[in-house]
Length: 480
Image (cartoon, rainbow, N blue to C red):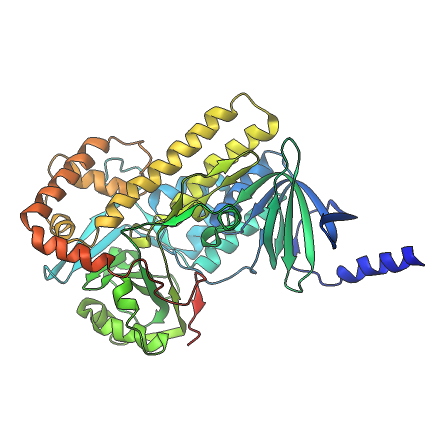
């Protein structure tokens, strides 16, 4: 009788079935004691990926192609709202490798460059990717992330990846020279245990392993928060430039305007904590009030209406000192996030996932190439973050604005910057010398107008150590 009651208890715990997509199942209904008094069904696999965004979808698909049994835990259900909607040209070869580029082309509007708008100079200028040092990738796409991420996760499923949606990873027990145990929980509160040879943290801004290990730190001199939404009726740029992203400076930070193929537009402001902390009204009204503070944005949105609700995201800039260990790896935003101004987030995620797949494969095969792949992974990821960080941290300074709005190129500085903007940030093109010269020019201009630039810097960092909003998740609507 006790055995029968025990079996019924097990079956009762399995009544709730989260979304699970797979070709075949290797779930073993056995009991695994992971903590005193806790029992749960056990699922075994070669690789467990935490997070089903671009990084998680990409690395899981590539590892499945290599023959590994891969499971993905995703706390949400696709499709789901997200920002980071402007792709970089050098992401397209990665999407081609994944086999999803034709589908992305169907949902995207072509982006040939970026319009930079400066109210301080009373004009704008457009930078075209075709003029980069390496002009082989002259365009990219603007996409709705709900559609883009769904394409990537479905592609992983088509290659044999088992995707568990509605499942949140809680903790990992790493066991030396053995498999690792990952405790997870479904939305009904049922505990599920996964046994994996390797764990990939692709949890994005949730930074799953950092929550367990610690070690994540915010940038001490750069932090920001965003308010944003999707709109109808936003005026578009003419002709070939219709799909270009517009980036607009204003007194409290900068704006993005990203058009979509269906006629809607993503519009958002990335602002300093000192400004966000002044919010006393509901988030939607605060967004419209902020629009009114920037004439170039307000003019393009004179006939716009908000689709759905306004969103907020806080505490942008962070990173870890380490990104890997024995039996685990961090890819994409799980390791570092800087700022969306150059649309680098998805590109860095896809790049780290591509290189990370080679690391995991070599580890599991016990290949002598493991250390080489690991070194290339770390070098490339850190270089990409470092390259974009310098530009992002100086982007709103008066000295940077003056240089960026200057016409003409000397010593190929503009071409090198365009290469970075296109996603060529990993040392493949000869950008080092031109970028070095641009930095020298920046600091000279900074010193020439020291008081103005120092005042702007102090205003930007004011309030960084403070919590600027109670919204912690990346894309939650206002709870006020």
